[in-house]
Amino acid sequence: MLPSMKTLFAAMLVSVAQPPEATISPDRLMEALRALPPERSVLRTPDEQDTLKQTEELLIARLRAIGLEPTEQTLEWSTGGMARVWSEDGWKFVPDPTPRSWRNIYVEFPGAVSPNEVIIVGAHFDSHPNTPGADDNASGVAAALEMARALKDTSTARTIRIVFFNLEEIGLVGSREHAAWMQQRIEQGQEHIVGMLSLEMIGYYADEPNSQRSPIPAIPGVFTPPTVGDFLGVVANQSSAAFARQLVSSMRQAEPALKVELLDFIPGAGEMFPDVRRSDHSPFWDIGAPAVMVTDTSEFRTPHYHQPSDTPDTIDVERFTLATRALTGAVWRLARPVVRLDESNEDR
Image (cartoon, rainbow, N blue to C red):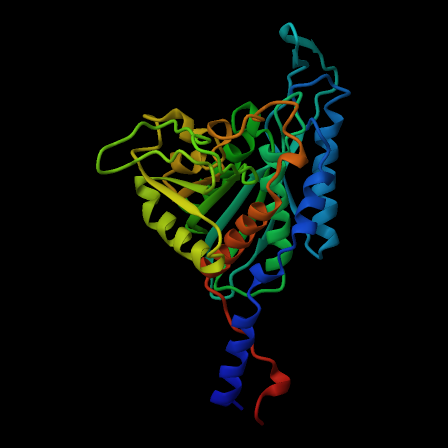
């Protein structure tokens, strides 16, 4: 028998009362951030590359620990037998007799109504050499892990895919291969990208005057560069603007306490402003998909960018948590939640 209107209304109230962003924990976020091995770079000696391989295994183990079974996507890249290594004297090459294979890792929550409509959340887990990479990009990875945990038991009409990209720091290798794989699926009619979010450094904030710079000059009537680094930025090209506005609206609904700034007028695929292409969203721009970079703006704000000082103690835990809540709630809303009724409460 169909449930009564009273039962349906009660079920909807339960869904609204506990949206997934409400379960985001600052302690879990920071524990996950600190757990990532430091110096997660492929631009190191063969022995030192073990930390990046350990990071792959750690992510797989953490996803399994929360009840998810990750998929591994092998990347078509290796050192070719000579590892490029940064030293105080500059770049040098050292023998790498057994080049490793590298992986993207992703989990998927299939849509219950429109599974071919996909929202992608990506965060790269490799780091620049000689830096712990807490903000760049352990912050994005920890947020994606916590998002996966929060969304695990939800049901949405659209599919959500959370991807941990590798080798971003050497030319967006992981996201380029994933975007190319998705383009084939799109051309075959298997998938449609609703939108892609690249979580690229989301943990550093500053309230001092002139703590924020901009790679884009002022454009009268269009853009006034902010001068205080107290916000999370969402960067979109013009063809991604509609998705970006929906995302920002949903972020503000999920977490009104977070200040969000939207920049959505980038022409083409960002060629005029190369700085806005420096993350895993740009391969999706290149295939014509809606995509955004969600960022604290890296070196245009933080003095720790690609430095040994990019450590967990520089993370603004409160605003990092707000950002993760906003993003988790927004992705859930954009994927169109499906209310599941508790059959034990149905009238019979």
